[in-house]
Amino acid sequence: MEIIIKPNAAEARLETANLLRRQLDRKSDSVLGLATGSTPIGVYALLVGMHAQDGLDFSRVRTFNLDEYVGLGSDHPCSYRQFMEEHLFGRVNIGVGNIHFPNGLARDITKHCDEYEAAIQKVGGIDLQLLGIGRDGHIGFNEPSSSLASRTRLKTITPQTSADNATCFGGADKVPHHVITMGVGTIMEARQCVLIATGSAKATAVAQMAEGPITADCPASVLQMHPRCQLIVDEESAGRLKRAEYYRWVYDHKPEWQRCGAAPKAVAAGSRS
Ligand code: F6R
Image (cartoon, rainbow, N blue to C red; front, top):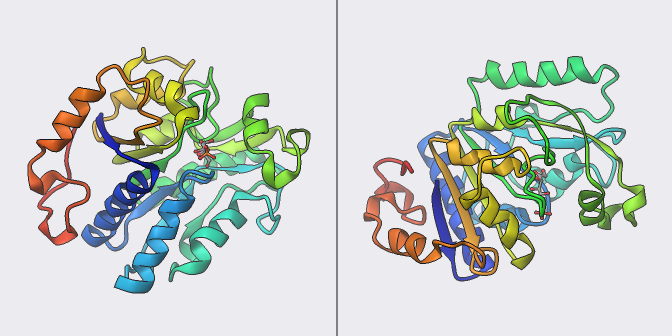
């Protein structure tokens, strides 16, 4: 895992957005796995700016979002589909037919989850999966105890996650308990994973995922097994990393062509970690 510590959240977001931009520059019909939540909002705002100012093209990009609440239609104001519409899809030139989302109103959820997996396979798999992390170490909605081999399926979120996601719903008790989420195994099959975390509330989860044991108790820890994974953090969320000095040194001494923030055309190949 490549661990990139940026001085603040704004720089962590810029690093992440540049990495996504380089992916689209390399492959205009990239398949992106996308996350919702408060952390990627600023990343999407930067991508929208790159689209508006530099013509970053989304017309051939295909997307698969990680998760959706069961019981919410795609037009529900608190659905993740609406979140993506507000922060990215409605503000760039992505084709609506290229957007894939778990359907929170699916009648046969098991069948729908199998179809979601099949749709990912049909386009050749996910090139780059953007991730956030929950305070309990979840990725997607794979809460602690999720199988590290799991596929897209129905899950029940924890009371802590309900509380963390309560704002749109006007209270934790109003947050749907059930969600459809890509599985940990599904996420691990992406060719590249990029996890962004900011703020001191994520410091424990970040340390556990990067330096703790690989365990279903912290589902994100399985990313230690991913052959190409970047963890991009600000100083606050890096606060509990034991080897922070070493990660900073590695990043500062990276060859220029490997840098995430390097101008896209100067990059000969992605970094492997
Ligand atoms: C949502 C998702 C979640 C969030 C996580 C962090 O699609 O994938 O795993 O990334 O709950 O959420 P924020 O960014 O709101 O702290």
